[in-house]
Image 1 (cartoon, rainbow, N blue to C red):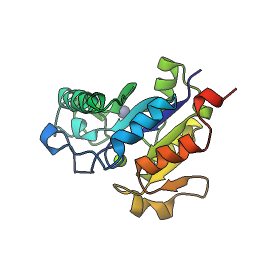
Image 2: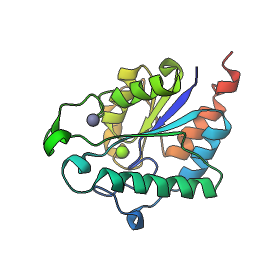
Image 3: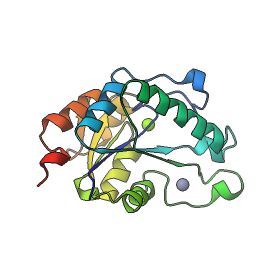
Length: 190
Ligand SMILES: [Mg+2]
Ligand SMILES: [Zn+2]
């Protein structure tokens, strides 16, 4: 089985902007590309899990989300970094049409992590969720993962809300370095 790092997107990988969906508004958080590359090199299966309720609210489409993800992937690839799997939740209770359904994937529910585990043979108990919101931490805990809150995005505000079992790091690069340096990398599991 694989060991994954689940990454929130907005506020963790890229600068938080309300309902980001345009490529020209996308901006990596400093160190994010290096962080993903470190996780790749350490052998983690890097999976993005992102709430995108802007789809349900009619602010943008799933195609917009996927175009942005292709852009991010290309930017990462140009620097030798790679996201292994992309998951997003387009739903919201206040949304339109079929997007309003009560879903199991919107964080803090663990649906995206569990689905990724099934699809990609991931050992959730050996995996880590990194995000900037309490909802990310909740999803990670519900899925049985170790959790790291980053202080970027909403993280500085949400830091006081997480329990002591959640590690807190300044940003995604600090989190990745902490994981890699802890020696708990996949190659050393057995
Ligand atoms: Mg976020
Ligand atoms: Zn959903």
